[in-house]
Structures are given as structure tokens and as C-alpha cells.
Image (tube, rainbow, N blue to C red; front, side, top):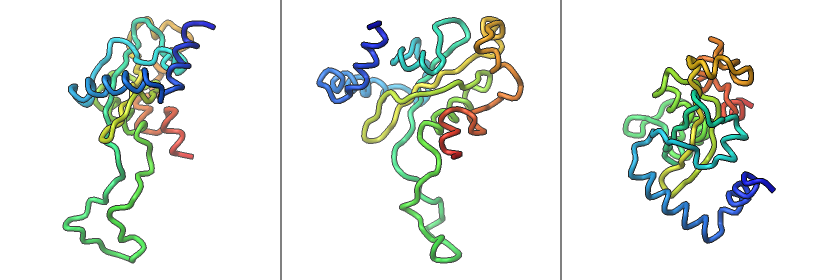
Length: 173
């Protein structure tokens, strides 16, 4: 078995003592940072490579923090209008996943980069943490690579805002 096989096996056993301790320590560290922060290399290299990441120029990884929980309807003083069936305020479920929200936030903040994919890395009682793989479409290393240069086309501008990433396709059905 190769090294990545062992790494992915570790991540499959998240309830093991070692992983629980590691995740707890990492989560504390993540809380000290801003909600969107660049990381030098992926926390899960095996997962990142499966989703298209390559350790070369033009590929960037960002960690994004998203608040957990449902979505409360923003109504002033809880006053809702219309039929009783539409008068819910608290127990509503947001249609999109936290992962797609994380991708969107990263894409908005980093307008010059294109979102390739994302994956879960950690969570605590308040937040979920995702790593987003972004690609610099203006970089020659990307433009000249036939495997990834499809993302340089103008049609792929802000894929994450139009539900064209993996997480986005899931919520569209």
C-alpha cells in the first residue's frame, strides 16, 4: 500500500484516540484564525489530490469556517404575513449545504481565482471547517496543462456561485 492509502485510512477512523486528539487541537488552532485563511498545504493531501489538487504553481488551498445550525427567517420582530403554512420562522432548513456556502464565500473573497473543489476537515459545536481548492486561471502552469486548462475558459467564471462545483451540483438535484 502507498502512503496515501494509509493517510486515507487514518481519516476513515475519525473516532480513534489519535484522530480525536489531533482534531481537537487543530480545531482550537482554527478558531484563533479568521474565517477565510490561506493554508500552505492541504490538511488532507490524499483527499485534495483525489479532488484535483496538484502540488504545483497555480493551485491554492484556503480554509473556510462556516457557522453551524439552521437558517432563521429574517423577519422584523417575528411578524410574518400570508398563509399559516408559510409562517414558519425558526425550524426552516437552508436548501444548500454548508460546503457549498464555504465555496461561495471563498469564491467571492478571491475573485481572481476559480474554485475547483472542496472537502470537510473539521467541526466543533459552533463551526464547520472546509478546505477549498482554488486555481489561478491566469498562471501559465495552469494554462499550459491540458488536464486543467478547461477552467481557464470564460464560461467557468464563478462556478461556485452558479452551482457548478461538486457541492453545488448536489443541492441542485
